[in-house]
Image 1 (cartoon, rainbow, N blue to C red):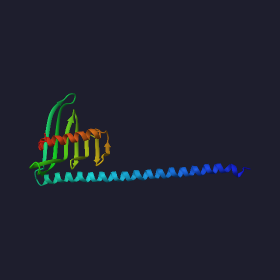
Image 2: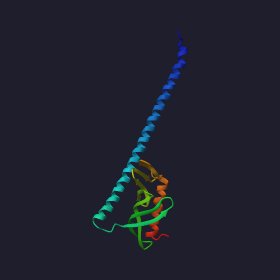
Image 3: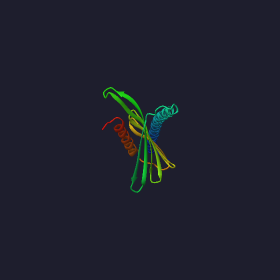
Image 4: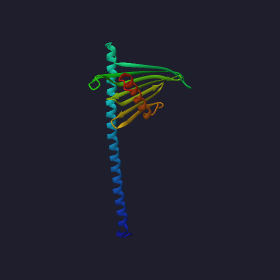
Amino acid sequence: MLSPGILAPNKVIMITYLKRRRLINLLVIAYCLLVSVGASAQNTQVAKIRKMYGEAKEVMANKQKAELPPDETVVTSNYMAAGAGPIKDETHYFYSGDFDEDLGAQYYTPYFITRKYNVGARNYYEEYLFDKGSLVFYFCKSQNDETRYYWGTNGFFHQDVKGQKMMDEVIASRIAYDLKDAFDKLMNREF
C-alpha cells in the first residue's frame, strides 16, 4: 500500500499539467478567433473593392450605351522584342476630370486601366483599378491562368490565383504606377 505522501507530488504534477493544457487550449481558441476576425475584415475589404470594380465597369458601359464620350485615352505600341518577336501593346485609360483651381486647367485622374498585349504567341489581358489615385486591384488573364491582387490602406492584403501566377504583386504594383505616371505625363503634362 502506498502512503498519501507519495501520491501528493503526482497530484501536483497532474494539476499543473491540466492547468497548462487549459491555458494552451485557451490560447489556441483565441488565435482561431483572431484569424477568423482578420479573415472577415479581409473579406469585407475584398467585397468593397469588387463593388468599386463593378461600379467602374457600369460607368464605362453606361457611357457606351448612351453613346457619350467615354473619357478614355488609348495608347497603342507596336515593337519588336528579342526572343518574343513582334509585340502589340494596347492600353486603355479610363479617367475622370476635375477643374484644378491652382493650375487653372482641367486635371485628369485615371480610375481604371486595361492593357492587352502579347509576348510571342501568348496573349495577356490586364486590369488595374485605382481609388483616389491608389491601386486597389490588379487582374491578369492569359489562357487558363488568372491572377487577382487586392491592396488596401495598409498595402497588399489578398490574392486569388487560378492556374499559374502571372506576376508577383510588387511587379504588378510597379507597372500600375508606371502606367499611371505615363498617363499623367500624357494628359496632365506633368513632365
